Length: 107
Length: 115
Image 1 (tube, rainbow over the protein chains, first blue to last red):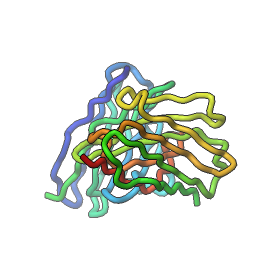
Image 2: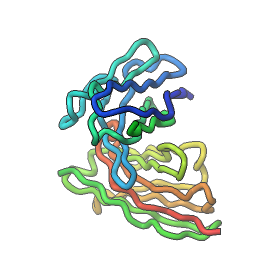
Image 3: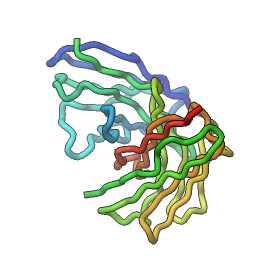
Image 4: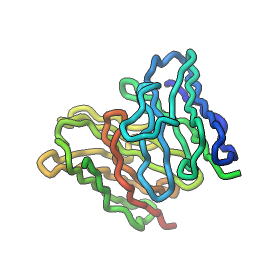
């Protein structure tokens, strides 16, 4: 089974900072990766799918990129509403695998 | 608006069973495969189960294989998750999600397993 390793597990940042979160796949997964934002008590929200595609309605400060088996979610200028936990998700055939999550906290 | 609403959570006895439900609205439920995901305290999101549109393909995560059963009723726009032999580690918020790269999620229903 393909494993997803997400880092960091948490980070502290200030409003306006550029933030990057990384997921590394244990083998080549093409562009089969999505990114989600989750705030406790609310439904998780899909931000990016197929590695690069921005979900409709999601601000353009969120972007996804890929280099080989390493995928990155970038928030270009952190806003107060962006403090949350972020997860990557890989899906292929009969398997879905989330990264461990990255909690973005206010510095 | 495409929506999913879960229900059926609550306090369940260790070793007992619970049946969770998820009702869809705003979209053609029968056209989409569906999944269940959970979030346990102190842990991350965990995929649990998948069912295709006509219920003839089902997949389960190894952590719950043999103890849970996913099902659906397209006539009722409903998805279900039966959890048997409840364990402490089953205490979590359970979400249903549309399997279009999980583009639509419910708000979740909380399961607490008592000792």
